Image (cartoon, rainbow, N blue to C red; front, side):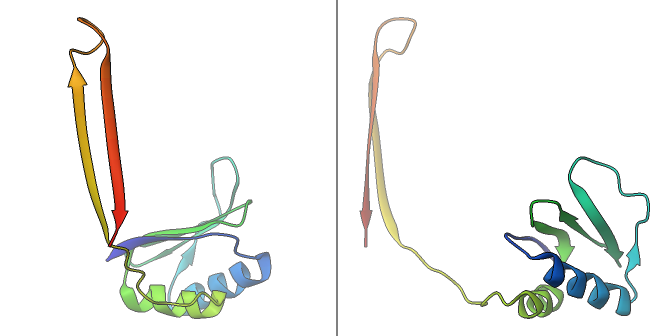
Length: 109
């Protein structure tokens, strides 16, 4: 179980997701409160919320549900791996006793 956010979801895709959730024993919350919320569906322990700006958010969804919804929306599923080497160093005493300088380097490997 993990949370997931989809961005730029069209209203048509959001309606198809809602139909999928309700067809799989999801219960639509008819008393949606909060700014920008269009609908909310509870499916077992997961809560799916669709917002005015096209964001669909769920908490505690199963991997299977996330994959099915991603297919409905048309999102490609795959892992993105980025590997970086990051180094940080600081010098100085800070704002109480003097200037503090922080520098960092990021190297793609």
